[in-house]
Each structure stands twice: as C-alpha cells, then as structure tokens.
Length: 76
Image 1 (spheres, helix red, strand yellow):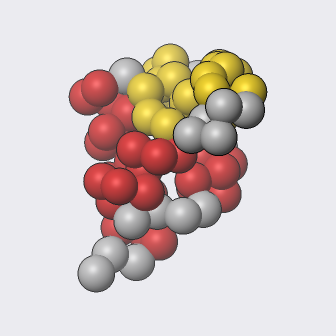
Image 2 (cartoon, rainbow, N blue to C red):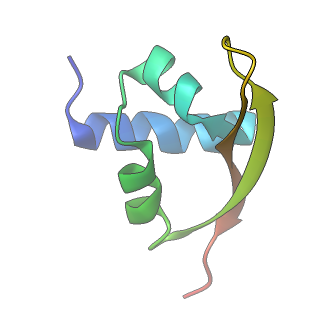
C-alpha cells in the first residue's frame, strides 16, 4: 500500500510521462482519493493546469470533472 508521499510521487511521474491525469485515473491506478490535495502540493514546484471537462454520468446527468495537465517545472 502506498502512503500519500508515494502517491504524490506516482502521480507526478504519471503527469510527467503521460501529460495529464484525472481523479478517476488517480484513484484506479494509484489508490489516490485526495488528488486535489496532491496537486495542490505539487503546484509548489510544478506548473499544473486544471482543465474542466464535461460528461454525462451513468444516471444521464451532466457532470464536470477536472483534468490536471502537466506544464513543467516552475522557474525559481
């Protein structure tokens, strides 16, 4: 089982290699249920943009979710 630090590392590596991640991907791949907290921490050193996406859920209702997009390392 990964701790939050391990999840943060895994999510950062995912962002760097794949370019983006959603909360569903973070949960299914890394067991991360607090993706917004992890992204908040990562934003101290990395440029990560949030793109709001829309979809229809299994009940036919419109819903939105965030897709986090890696832009690079912040300039110091």
